[in-house]
Length: 164
Image (cartoon, rainbow, N blue to C red; front, side):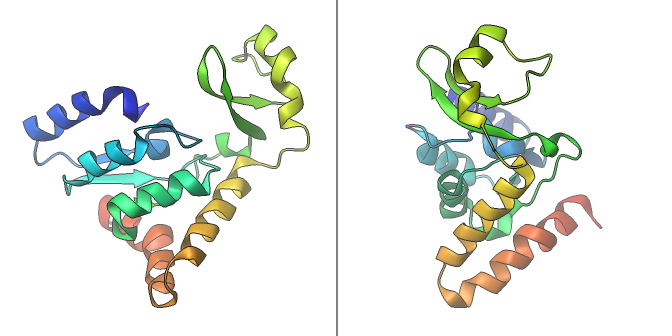
């Protein structure tokens, strides 16, 4: 998670100033955690960093990213077909930020699943959770910024980064 490795990332960005870095999944934080906005602001000083929103259901986390980077450096990430997971993000008292699904995938710890799977009952696909969270953040912006933010996140930024 980006809050745990921000200093390493900063060193990489200094050592390789021409390297374009796409920080996937907004740095893997699916719920707000202490130090996340500060980490985003440190990283945002480097213009070659862009974030993607893949599998992120949190309007709070997306809002922090927009606050630090602006809409011109955040792009929608779909992560097909993995985004078809139906999960809920939660804070595990021993393991920290985690996700849980109703279905017990092969990568899920059996004891943890048994204890927390009820949290994911009726969860919708994370793809939709992510789009709803992005929409909420865009709608929270001043009206005159909403159109360009939507175009940036869903089109312009990926076009620029990938050279489409």
